[in-house]
Image (tube, rainbow, N blue to C red):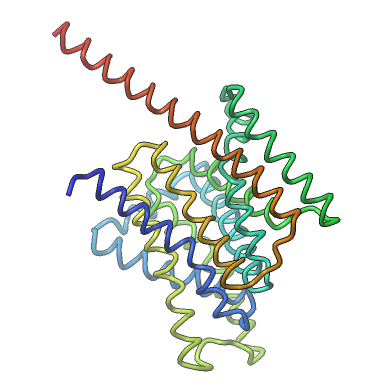
Length: 306
């Protein structure tokens, strides 16, 4: 099996875990989202510490946090990912997984827009058209349902801002996420302490709930490790296209398994967003192909000169 094939398989596996994770959090619908998030944070930290200890990279966590700039960026990233996780868990538990899926569909184009605003990245006409279609879709859904899809917007925005902070960090994803959950762990402990003090904690109340809450760690950490493995072996265009497996599975779970309402307004909005993603994906794939062709030509030219 080639490295590309392994990367392809790892990316699909990661996206499947992410996409089907809504089923897992639906099983914990009777546990407050803040409590689930606290367990997710602490058990993820435990899992990552074990992984990094085995790899001999545990000290890298503290190196990653050294300096006010790195610490500040990690703190921002931690806040954004905690916000994203909380909204997603709450959305699934409250019967709004469709809107969560919408948020993850919108995210790539929010990321493009943030790149334009923050890094002054140039957008071609196709990319601008894709962003415009998403804007129309959100506006249409707002008009049809009588309120804006705030959960979807917050999921896309928080994940986009999370990516923005990560882009400025010079450490790998596993190290940085470990540092992020480490920073979040005092808050997580405080939440669980208050919950336990009130006698309402789910952990230890039953074997089922205890096992599920502990599993939140591996379910969070495993796809991230797979994604990190895949990202080193796939082009960004391929990884980007495969990442749509995640919201597609979330959408399937919401509409087919959870039987959430899916109105005509939802149909129109999702069709527009899917069209926008198709435009974005095609232009991204072409740009990636042109970039690789230019690199091969430069490499061949250098070899000839040598």
